[in-house]
Length: 118
Image 1 (tube, rainbow, N blue to C red):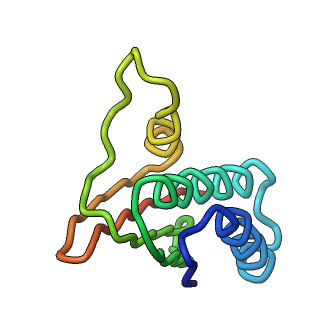
Image 2: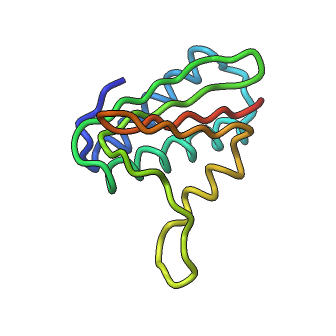
């Protein structure tokens, strides 16, 4: 799913994820669905804030859960939050909810891939 990278795409990405979950895992636990939506919101929000331009969201069913991939135009990798900074809490949330987190810089931006287990 391709988005223009402006603020409205955060809600659009969540709506797309809800539709994906309803279609592919209609009986998923509410807590799992909530975790997936939170991770997507955090990843897309980070892309909107820190990467100018469009972004792509990919969702994939895995044998033990779901894969979430966001591609954006910034080659900068996520950084840990410093104690004196406001904000920056989303990345640690993503890391705590996912059982796999992989960030790969590329020539035109980066790819962030996370996997959440059922």
